[in-house]
Image 1 (cartoon, rainbow, N blue to C red):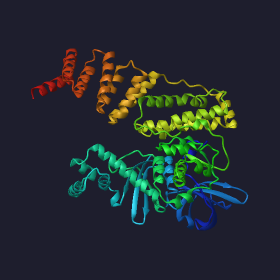
Image 2 (image 1 turned 180 degrees about the vertical axis):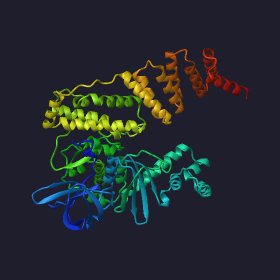
Image 3 (image 1 turned 120 degrees about the vertical axis):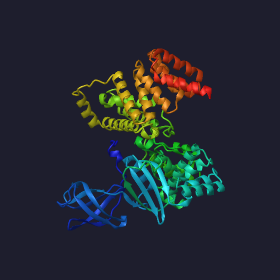
Image 4 (image 1 turned 90 degrees about the vertical axis):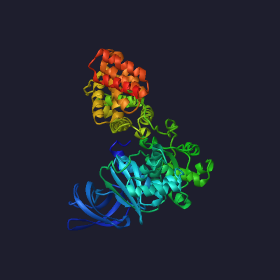
Length: 564
């Protein structure tokens, strides 16, 4: 099983063709072996000038490549030297690359930038953040937000024309204008933007050719709205829209090809929504049936079945194999829709697992005993990998938590790689006997760290993240009133008022004479509309501390509202 670094490599396509490369004033004949978004592999006769770090120019006509590149590795045999080069720019033509592979490879490479695809005068752009697709634009009028709202019936033609006129006069964004005119509410605008972006990306799956380029760099946050879009789900939906039978048939391997689930959890447990019929087709894949067998028992016609199989293969959930394999019972029900919210229980689980990583071995990571069999290891790996797969928890509340989840998944995969190999497992077991055990931090120490991180997040106005961190501190050490108090303040900032009341009440339960806590609870009661309860609470705070300005201001505010 590949490690975290290895599984981030771009998919390579086998390719053989002769070409010329230039290094300095020398021109050398070479033959390609494969290529990917990130580089090219080729063979040349042994030459001392081709070493890692060397810069060369190569021109491969049948790949439309004429680029400058750097040698990143070389391997010499008796007659030839095999070279791997890294391209400075990710670019190419759709006729040479699969769009699903491009989207998945960009996601797993964690790139940042703007990915543009052009087909004659049509230009569509996908904005990438940490590998995830977060926004898209198009120069086609039919892809604009106003047209999206009009086609979906959210606004009528008269409203559309009026909003366009106001937009041109004021220079404001079209969506903002439509909301300000009262034609739609903010929630509908959010739906429309997401729908517009998805439709732009989905339309690309109908393109048979086009030129693309990735311009790497940070996104300008004030210019694009950040969404969270699953590459696997868009690939699946995009291919299901294709109605060209000849295209689907040409993309389908031989009818004798056997299909099986991917052996890599990074592929298996992606966020993807299948309808019931497609789930039925997925259940027919058992490592023994070939495509012809599946077509004969599928509930759909041949074309629809082939489209589903092609979509699942393109998303890398299923793979092809030349011979039968045993059906893996641990892979039942692999498709589950991700949640739009991540609950606090799972966040606590991530934090606890991450904090333990430095102090536990690979057996403990997978929840195994030292005498576990190979079958035990395999089953444990799939269970734990499924639980912590990053794509199954697409909506993590912060980049910090997302990075921790990625680290956990990488360690889980590395543990399986080592323990599933008899040789590497023995070497690892031998190393355990000499390892010096480290003391894991106590819950109290971790709570202090979470509280400090929460204060930092709060100062940056990342109130949702702060509330999570303060909540973790309070969970790990419930005896510290300040943890509950700060959690209440952060929850109030994000309008989770009932939860804020509960947290603040817990702080007061620990320190019943703290006037500052009581004054803050008074403001929470005001948010809830409990005017009399807020008044009594402010009066209680003032009785404890007559100089408490916050309580006095709150009480005065209530009195002013009563006289108006």
